Amino acid sequence: MIGAIIGDIVGSRFEFNNHRNKNFKLFAEDCHVTDDSIMTLAIAKAIMETERAINKDYEKNGYYSLLEEMSVRYMQEIGRKYPDCGYGYRFNQWVFCANPEPYNSFGNGAAMRISPVGFIARTESEACKLSEIVTGVTHNHEEGLKGAEATAVAIFMAWNGCTKSEIRNKINSSYYPLNFTIDGIRDSYQFNETCQETVPQAIAAFLESGSFEDAIRTAISVGGDSDTLAAITGAIAEAYYGVPEILRKKALTYLDDELRAIYDEWCEFTEAGHPHSKFKMLTKYIGKLSDRAYFGDWVFDDENDGSSEHPKQMPFVKYDELVKMFVDEFYQFSQSHPEYKLMKYHLILEDYGVQPNTAGLRDAKVELLDAQCILAMIMCIIRFERFGEGLLLNFFKEGIILKWLKRLKTIDDSDIVSNPANIPNQSSKDK
Image (cartoon, rainbow, N blue to C red; front, top):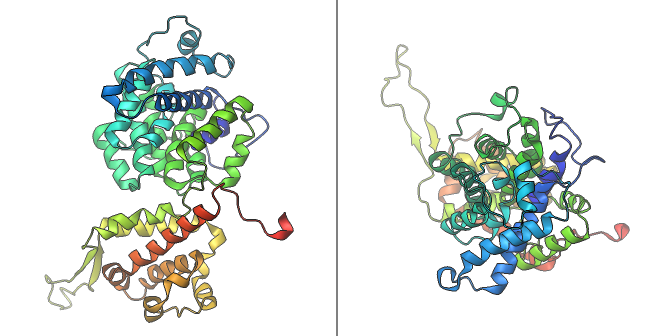
């Protein structure tokens, strides 16, 4: 949920003054919380109060009907305290109406507030049903329901370890054709408050990003309804990358005491206050690699005879898409985490006593190594592929990459247990 809040705050100053590139200061004096954050927190409050009142035996215990009631209650109760936060005309009428009814809207407000559903759902079908309930109290138009559901499903998938390719395929097949690029639409995209002209662009901004911050910057660069577009992108990016602590802390300074109390309550309720796994972008591949025997094959040229007229092509490895995706995301991770200095992998490995060759990498005692060294070993074998094609394939087949990722997961889990409040460790000179 904090990803949506950050996107909203960062995008707030660009909503009617679009900034069509990724070079800008994230937080500025004229940034502020808008209806995107306020309604997101209202939906979070509705979910919490519903689950406290009723166990998750949905059909028998009347969970859905109570969630619908709570969604109306808290969007009105909280929303009325912030009458000037940027509501659309029809939603503003709904917030202050004595007998609120859905008004067949397909506005992008349906998607901007949906992120708590994506994080709380246990299954994809549950994410869809919860999305329908909390959205239908206002945005009961087919396109409004679809926009919210597509966003909730993307968040759910990202949170539960799906790859970008899997998320893209799901959105393409079930919701919107993502047959465009952000660069391709940036110059022509116009301000639009509909789900069908906001949600696909927001999801594409996430899919093209390399980190949480890059996702926010990419979303803002599209133009249009910047705060809402960035809120949607930010929620998915949070689920996929996690949120840098410095950005989380800065965004929370924009919340007043009441909104901050709801956010803190949500963190405690969902146990979301602990650190997001630093390496989830990589360790999500553990399950995918564990269940897979095929990573690629050598391709040999059997069609040509080696003559000057028909020279043979050198053998090469055709890697499985999963491997190519892992390599791409590893490079993205390296670029967005310069603190690990992974392009100096030779020096890192030497410092840890690991020989930067295939034998040294195979024999390394991974249980004794920290995250920087494990990451350096992954970088090393990926870079070795340039000089000895097929080496990376062997390391996947032999389960060595999987072993390294499991070590990263162990380090992540240990960090979460030892630092549950998500407070970066400080040296004595910083205290």
